[in-house]
Image 1 (cartoon, rainbow, N blue to C red):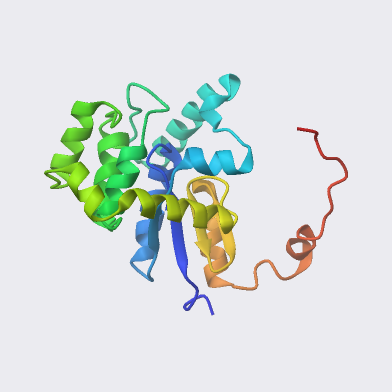
Image 2: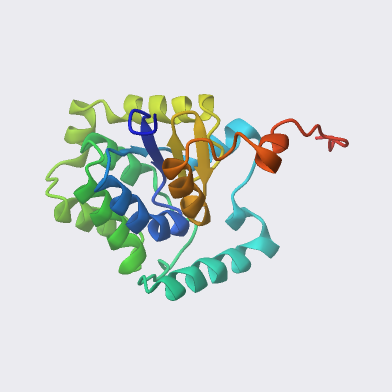
Length: 213
């Protein structure tokens, strides 16, 4: 069954955890098709009335330290850009216009998270475009109607229940965060992972208290 399930990876290059998850996504892609889907994290968070971890002052440094720790432990080079959060919208449109090919996605992530460069800076974004072989960003985005396409992908993601990035969607199941990749692999190996025992009971637990907004 899982061999026929559509597998989609939703990401925003603003997320260091997406860079951390990328090697696992690439390994999975070597075995079966995985659609790489750029989305706008800000729009996803706004849809659910949520905020990003870097928007909560006490959580910001913890998140940065955790991502650095996870990358170091995995042997993955990670260097934060000089500013974070940075503006990633143009990068997401650029990748959408390029068809979000694996090579383009890796190039963009490495530029930001391996080299520690800020694509929100005009000169740096121009350097990224050059590296991706894009001579005229505006022309490419207009020709591919990337603005509309990125908006549509983001809206489709929230409609599918995506609430953050990175998120891997296998059929109707979602796996959020780089730390959920082992569970996604387990689900691919055993599609009945959530069907029995405590896993099955989790889906029917009601909320006893709801916080007022």
